[in-house]
Each structure stands twice: as structure tokens, then as C-alpha cells.
Length: 298
Ligand code: G1P
Image (cartoon, rainbow, N blue to C red):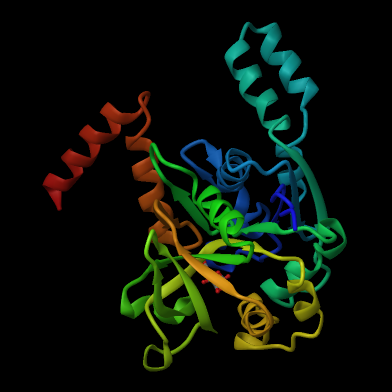
């Protein structure tokens, strides 16, 4: 049977952003910039670089400015051009052409699994990607994290969740997978799963391999999401539905390459801001000398 290529992605962005209040009272957390680019744009760019053409962003009533960000802004462009700012005009014009982006609202905050279920009619009967906005992954000089998962999906024809090892003290924050000990000789990053637990206590955690915001899922996941009851935190969890999918068909984890930043966390956000600024030619020297100066005073 011919495999359908992964061309659609879902980005859940309906969260309340409580960890970043008061900044997120009026501004969606997805629009908080790392240096000068909103976090959600990094996620959209990763999807596009991974071959995704159509993106559905799951929003709520407070997220208009995200839609404006990915739209044309003729007035701003015209003003920039009038004042000879061609580079800036090109910069904002490019964003509007990144991908076909659609929006649907999650009407009640019932959890990640419920948010993904809102994408059912958009996805139809195709495999699709999920990218979570709190996880920004940079794989300098290599394949984007999502592309690594899509390649694994294409090879195995099965759903793949992106994982990396986390400190034991962190396992309670994530979906944790139980990989089979069998490894694919030629591909040790890919493992067949036999269990998955959402935010376990350390003593119940089957491993320290955490799902870090990247998934490629087969459309059958919707059958399980539709009947999924509330789990951890009283929310409908994607992890629980994937676990049930796993009983019907094989699901793999892929230990993706790349540095992942938890930008949903204040410290992770500060780390990303510093690293991204240091990696920019226009900012590297001034930021590096400031960081050195600062370090000497600590
Ligand atoms: C969600 C998922 C969890 C995953 C995490 C990755 O949790 O439910 O399985 O490990 O994202 O960042 P959240 O951080 O939204 O509570």
C-alpha cells in the first residue's frame, strides 16, 4: 500500500499561558518573542522546513494577534517601503507566505487530547504531525526534529513520538515512554513502544525518555481521542489515546537530535533568549561581552 506523505500539521495553541502571567493577560504566550521572533513562528518554520504545507493552529478567543502575525499587513509593508525599508518589508512579507495556515477554536480547555481532536475534519484520513509550542528545538546544521520523525514514519509506516532523555527529577513533567529493549540495528534512535504514561511519579516512570512536543500520528488516533476520558490533571490526554492506539497498531519513539528548549518555562525561555542571541551575527559580540561582564560579578 502506498504511504500517504505527511503534509499537514497541528499546532495546539489554546493554552491560557498561566506560567507567564501577567505578560499573557493580553498577549498569547505563543507571541512572546525569543529575541525578535515570536515562539510560534519558530514552530511554524520547523514544520515548513520538514515538508509540511498545511498547518492548523488550535486557538481560543484571545489569540487574534497570532492570526495577524501570519497574515499580510499591507499598510505596514507600504509604510516600510515608502521609507526605504525594503529588508524589513521583505521580512514581514515572507511570514505571510510561509504555509497555508488555518485556525480553529478549542471551545473549552479540556486538555491536549481534546485540542487535537478539534483537528479531526481538517486532517481527514491522512497521517499528520503535531508540534507543541512550548518545545522549541534547534538542530544546527542537521535535519529539523520533525523531519527526523517524518523520515522514521515513512520508513516504518507507523506513528512516531519524538523523545529525549530528561533528568529523573523532571520525569513528572512529561509523557514518559516505555521502549522495548529490541533496537533496530541500523537505527538505534528508533524504538518500538509498549507503554506510555502521562506525568508519572519517578517511582512509576517506565524510563526517563520524555515526549518532547513532536509527534507524527496516523489518523486512527481520532477514534481513540473521541472516546478518551479525562486522565492526569482531569484533562483529556493525548498520551492516553496514543497508549490505546498502541494496543491496535505499532507505535515507535524516535530519540531526535537537536537542542530542545522548554520555552513554556521562565528559565527555559531565558536560556533560549541567550543562546539564540549568541547565535546571531548581529548580536553575538555585544551579548557575549555583556554575559562575560555579568558572569564576573556573580
Ligand atoms: C504535554 C504532553 C506531555 C509532553 C509535554 C512536552 O504536556 O501532555 O506528554 O511530554 O507536553 O512538552 P504539557 O507540558 O502541555 O503539560
